[in-house]
Length: 75
Image (cartoon, rainbow, N blue to C red):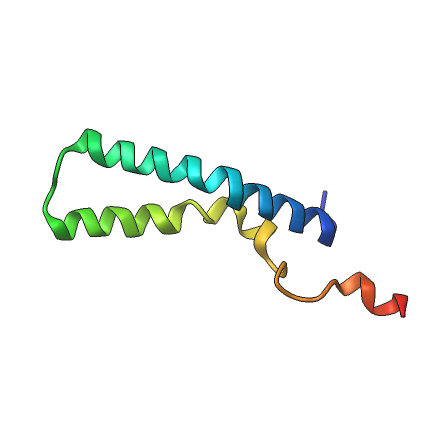
């Protein structure tokens, strides 16, 4: 079931305002649990975790920054 534009905008806000801070805490907890690896390894892990969190939500974020495509016919 495809989400409407307004639903995608709402879900993207929820994901960014609630989900992302939780994910940041989880990622920093994982890094604390692993100890202090070398700076390059730590950088690679943070970059990988920074990209991985958005992959499941790609469909939600797609086209959210553009104008509402359904509003074009409502003038």
